[in-house]
Image 1 (cartoon, protein in one colour):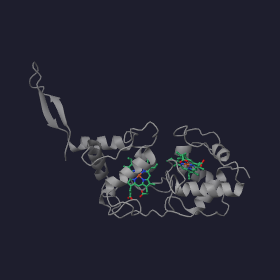
Image 2 (cartoon, protein in one colour):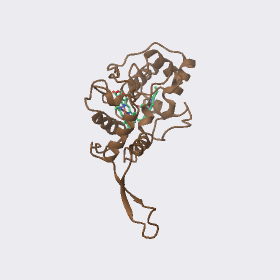
Image 3 (tube, rainbow, N blue to C red):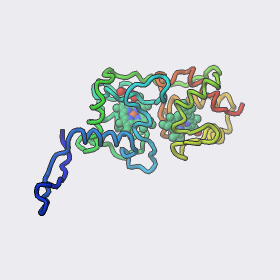
Image 4 (tube, helix red, strand yellow):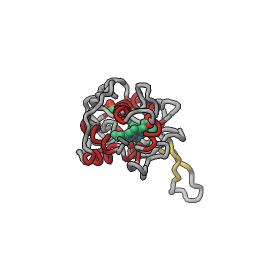
Length: 241
Ligand code: HEC
Ligand code: HEC
């Protein structure tokens, strides 16, 4: 493990307090990596309001916890491929997220201290799930059958609220750049019929900022959110009929 060298004062020589060079220990590096994982520090961009933890849990959680778009990362250091097979290299996958969602202008290099700290933290989560995680993307968004608004409120709270805040007020929004639902969305798509607007929500949730949609919302795969849950959420959004 390559640690940054730190200066430590030797208390054995109280008068001349000579600096002594000691290597930091692995637990320090893990703690540093954890601090990076849970803060916005892995992107220097002022437009980034995400941490890795916004979209990834450490361990798989039961159905009552938040429903995040990225896979839990315990075991990621043991997986053969990443991001639904799009990457063979772990750091490339991390840099993919930093570029697509966190507006990071430069990739992290394997030799950088932050990359080592993040790796030490991810490694500390082993064993976790060592197999490649499924990520089934819906490439052509379809109209969904109408859902159930009451169930949808519960799913909205677990899936969308952490970024968008409360429906109609945006209370608790991660940043005021994030669309207020449904009002901002309806203004943006005023020329469409209610039916087409619902399909556009399906498209946005399935594609995030990809497939030409733009923006920095992550896509939700079928594993992260099934069609029935999405149909329920769309009812809960209280879009004008
Ligand atoms: C805005 C949401 C978002 C943010 C922020 C984000 N990711 Fe991701 N990440 C995703 C999605 C979506 C995927 C694709 C699904 C998957 O494979 O987990 C993904 C995939 C990954 C993968 C591949 C996992 C696998 O097993 O296939 C790794 C590793 C990863 N992200 C690490 C990170 C790290 C580290 C950070 C912080 C620097 C980060 N991500 C920030 C959404 C995000
Ligand atoms: C990780 C944060 C995050 C999560 C979780 C998230 N969104 Fe978003 N969403 C954004 C951001 C950021 C934008 C604005 C930028 C953009 O369009 O990508 C946005 C924009 C939108 C828009 C407006 C698109 C437009 O063209 O005006 C809709 C609709 C939307 N989100 C729906 C949802 C729904 C429904 C969920 C839950 C299933 C959800 N979002 C979960 C971050 C998030």
